[in-house]
Length: 316
Length: 311
Image (cartoon, each protein chain N blue to C red):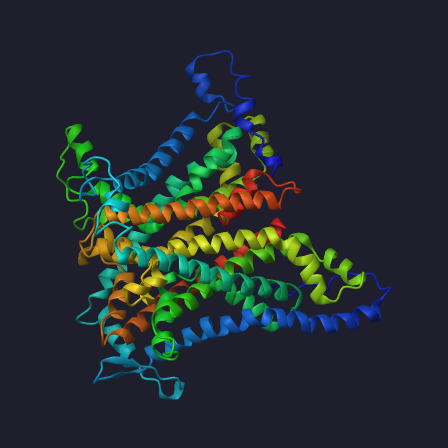
């Protein structure tokens, strides 16, 4: 992302090259133009539109939001309402925010605890069966999120297979798993997002030079010591980017919750935004809330972009 | 990548661990990592068995998603009202998914590839900033992006409105970073020597692109097309926010709204199984195609697998 060095070339055809470069520059500008215009119109403008709606007014007749595009006329009515809902006397969003952070933290930690050993094994020890393991590991990546949630809805019903198995081994077998249990939602999040983490971890761990690990063991380190002293420090980067790739979508998740619990007792911030978007009169507040979430995530997002750009440069 | 894949654990495992009992076997750093392997298998069972069961339930001869009542194809063909073959709503959902995947891929791939080719050689403040914007569109939470799309198509660009056009425009924006990122990575490995050689031999920039760069980039372009197509099949949040009638509701949104609305049943599993089959067909074709296109190169089957999965 930093300034790029000018390409080193021989100076034999210097003038010819400069002329060609001028000509080429225009050609490459033209090539990039459609993508740039598309992103400007359908990525940057929409976010300005969200700001204009968040800082806009409400049409009291239709209860629909009115966007205000001129910053001089911006109103803080929606912001005040949102602030009141989070911190004010009638606050109902603060517990939801804390719950979102708590669910996301537990779910992503579990993703790492489950995903790391599996990715580590396949990247470093699978041997000749590596391709087979890899196919099985990335299979969920190709299966629709809805289908994977449906799979658990089937299993977790009161008369479903999980309760049957529990009853068979003599445990209580009438738990209503889908009736608003926090652990069902957290496990749903883990199940939903772990394939993305595993893919990132696998790619990162696969790049670690195997001879480093062998050297560690040759020099008398045990398995655990090799792991702690060599593998873990080298996998810091994939762990960080992998965690981000699971945390970012979890914070905007509203469907896992709806499908596996559907009760307000497990609502996350995504549910609040989704509800406000679908309720007349509250869309402006939905816009404010989305912008607040975005503001909280800007720094991790930029970190992710820079980290992946750096590792791409190193790989090439 | 290829050098590091020598199985350090497996080949040398048996050699030094001859003497001693169980204790020294545990301590031997060269033994096979049995616990790790066992854990990996447990993980794979947990991740795949529920899906296999969900596919099985699409063949259930009853209305339950939890109790097996015998094998039947009623949710695919036999049921005269609620099967995929006879229900208009279900067919609309399948068609809408295919339509969105095809449209998005057709628009996003040329857009992303030309963007990557242009940005790679045209260095300026504008190009660097928009490359950054492109990468941001890759990591922004989908709900936040979907909210922005919902507002822009209902206020500023209200002529677009909700429906297939809005869904396509949003999905293209959401997915254009796949070809842009993958092609840029490939360009970085190829380097500038090919295009400079072509220019020295008298190609104009257009001929260089058409005759040299596009053929060299074809595996990357192909891989990104496979990724975009399959990502759109599985996409949920954007289309959920931008669809407004049965005619523009794809499979994922249909499954969600029915299951959430208490109208679950094996027909949804049948729909999910169709989605799964589509994705796997695309993945398999993508893998075979990618292998054929990179035949002359040193890459392994494992490289091809991770590329097709976006790794």
